[in-house]
Length: 278
Image (cartoon, rainbow, N blue to C red; front, top):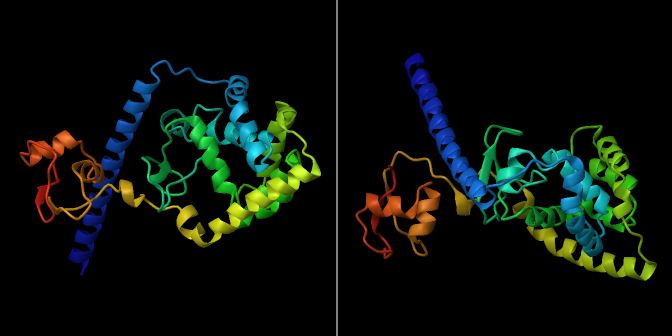
């Protein structure tokens, strides 16, 4: 019995080690792409961060009613003013994790658990827009009835709705807003405009409700970007497969997949066996 338990423990350790190495390789690819896209990245200070992203925060406020000050303060707190590894390499300024419906790339980082899966965005602007989408659900719906310059009740309401576990989170947000005078970017709205905005936002929230579990529950890896851990060196081609999506699932390049299988073109057939372990 002890022998079996030891073998099981060794298998778990080996599996975890392989998994971590694959996540590391994935992150290296993401980081190389980010450095290539932005070779002259310069660290932000908080004032330069505000200047860079106040525009998109105001746009999102005018569309959905989330105070620009709230969005900016959350970005400052959660991304270290744009200098965290998630912000720098994944353009993820709000720590939004992968979910089952996420179709983009993934970046792995220890958070609630080891190697949590985070979304990778093409740019920071996309991250800001996804932050608004993240809030457009039933648990936060009452906040959209607040005035779009009511940052104090937005900060308190986010905590009450479960956005953060830190009991001091509202104070952190409010203090950041007031320290950097972020409330100057908030705008009032007329009652007719507020009613129109609420009608539009609540229509979208109601449409989201049946899909919320899939849309907002974090998963270890989104299905479209799964890194497969397997001792089977082969994969059987299924309907809809391409060399590209197979290579991404097994964390390799298309050229590596073609080389392993002596392929000279992009054509593959349903039922074809491919070697997928390097």
